[in-house]
Image (cartoon, rainbow, N blue to C red; front, top):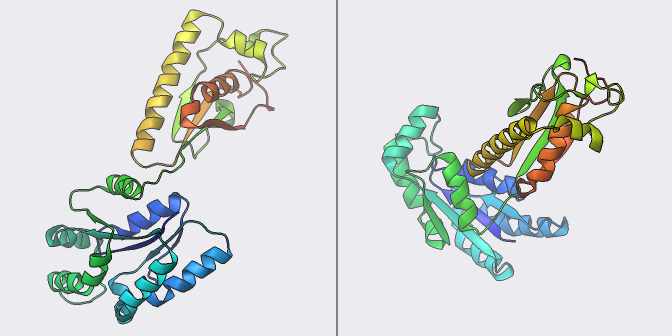
Length: 280
């Protein structure tokens, strides 16, 4: 896995790039002077860390004199060393700073700061394997560009849980699906004490074509929502499936979704209310 040095102009998206790499399994360190790159490499190896990313930019200007020597030393030890440099037009950087009201690390007028910063970081840009102009990129687009540029992938998880509305919906779900219109095993005496984890209970829930049609609509909508979340750079998406008590219908639907959406790494993380009982 590559050792990545992230640099670029203030406001160009370095924080987004670092967060993206962290989500992809990298150990990340921000604002690290070049002379400490080798020490970070050694420490990571000693801890068994295979993915490391460090950020160096104008904030470390007092240490940039050691830049080229530090890079050469590290490049001899890491054939997979990569330098990722981000930039944008001064007009866009100015607009971003005006929105955030942050102070530029060089502390002069902004346009003068951008010009001086470009000059200060020119040696790092010259070393860059990858240069990304973020002028027209949103944060999710930049995240995707960083992953593609480094030939990286990250895991996406579709998390499913079941619950009962009478016990209140979960507060941390991205999407809540109501399946109370499906046939209710509560009204069948021999099924009432059992759960949707059992095949004959699930068979009752999906007993007719209208129930199957409803489930297909739910499945397709959950797929669409999860795929759009993944395309936007999300690493996980949580869908809560609810019925009245959380014992029969919601459990059956969540389990079936997990089987049908394996390509999205779907998994049931919890049947929250399965032991609390169903009500009509």
